[in-house]
Image 1 (cartoon, helix red, strand yellow):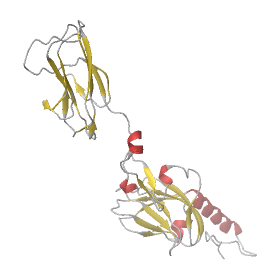
Image 2 (spheres, rainbow, N blue to C red):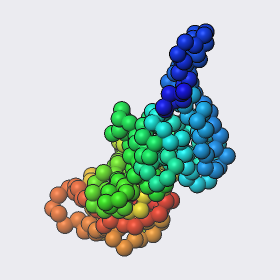
Image 3 (cartoon, one colour):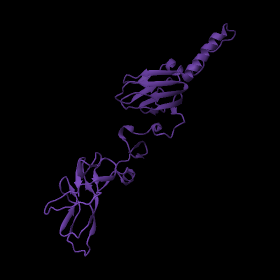
Image 4 (cartoon, rainbow, N blue to C red):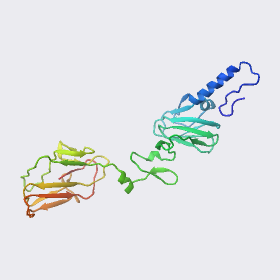
Length: 283
């Protein structure tokens, strides 16, 4: 007569050579706790045999999946570790036969499960880790997404004030280290910058020193500039330009030399401007 869950043979009364049965039982227990079985899913649902489930402590699922798949366990009480080592970015749902509770194993995760033959549950230890959230729509979430619970599942919260507040800063602060003399009149002259105090995404390139270029992933920008004249300026236009031309909301001002001071300092700022990757700005 075997044991109720692992089906390990019992020692019979008055049995000869009991050590054979005992040693087999010890090996069975050792394997059930420690042995690893690598199992290719071949892009299909898989049902474990009794020997596969009861004589291994870790099931490693491999293969390439094109959709979420199901791993069905024999209907007995059992604690088992399962790793989703498949490629293709698909989850695996571990369960018993029938419609009981199941455990979702996301790609790259290893989960310890415990069941009673009807319902299967994830077991403690790391339950707070992101990969252990079994109701996350991971297929719809991308890096830096904020998750929101809708009462049934977790998913990306979408664009909102809270999400924008958590976005990492992206920008650059460029400057001149020497004075610039502009002698040309009646023609737009872009200021060539000489160094970057900081530059998060290579917006400034010394090879195109007048430009700040929008990197991929940025859809809105705001620009601020500061200019100081060493001599009193007269009738000078300063503006922020986009892609070599004027832009609505770019910001501009005209200095007419009526301050009464020998020099002047002015700030200029744009509105929040819509952009695409590759757009560039000059002052």
